[in-house]
Image (cartoon, rainbow, N blue to C red; front, side, top):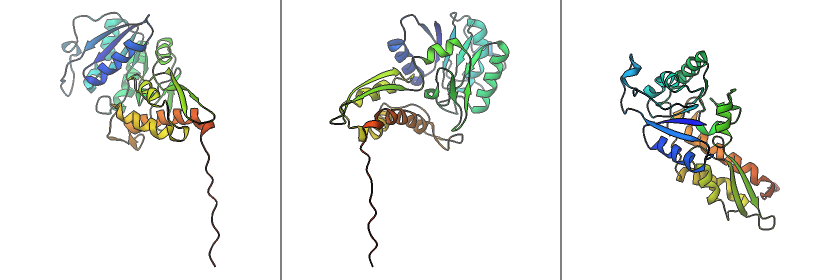
Length: 253
C-alpha cells in the first residue's frame, strides 16, 4: 500500500515515525510538508499545492490547520488516492462541519473517507464522531490501515497468584504509538491498579489530542482518548481484579 501522509508539525511527525517503525514492511510511506499559513478562504488550491505529488492509495491528513483539509480533494485527484483518513483530534484543525463536507466531497469523487474523532476511535469497520455516534465505512484500504493502527487492542497476561501483569502485547496500536508506550509501562503493575496506571501513562506520553472542551463529548478529546485506552486495559484485567464488598454498618439506637 502506498501512503501519503500530510504533516505540518510534531503531531504528524510523531504519527509518521510510529507507522514507519511498526507498520508492515510492504507499506511505502511518503510525506508532504504542508504550508504553515492559509487565508480564511482558499479560492485557488493550486496556490498552496506542489506541482506534483507521489502516487498514493491512501492519504493520511495529519495537518494542523483547517486549510489543509480543504486541499485534500485536489490532492486525491493528483495522487489517484482511493481513500482518506482525516482525524479530528483538534476542532481547530478540522471542525466537525468541515469534516462532514470533506466526507461528502470525497464520496462524490468515489473516494472513501474516515474522519475519526478522536483518531484512536478508528476500527476496521467504523469510527467515532460523537459520544454515542459511530459511522461505518467500506474501504479495503482504510480497513487494512486499521488492522494495525487505530482503536487500541492489547493482549495482557496476569499472574493468577499475584494478580500482577507479566506481559502486555499490542495487537493494534494507536497511530501515535501511545498504546505501545502504555503496554510497556504496565509490566509489573497490579491488575487492581492497571486502569489508573494506563491513564497516567497515556497523559505522560503525552497524548497530543486537544485539551479544549469538545461539545460532541462534553469533555476534552485527550480525556476521550485516554478513556478509550483505559477501557481496553480494564476489560483485559477484569477477571483478575479484586472485588471489594462494603457491608453497611448497623444504625446506632
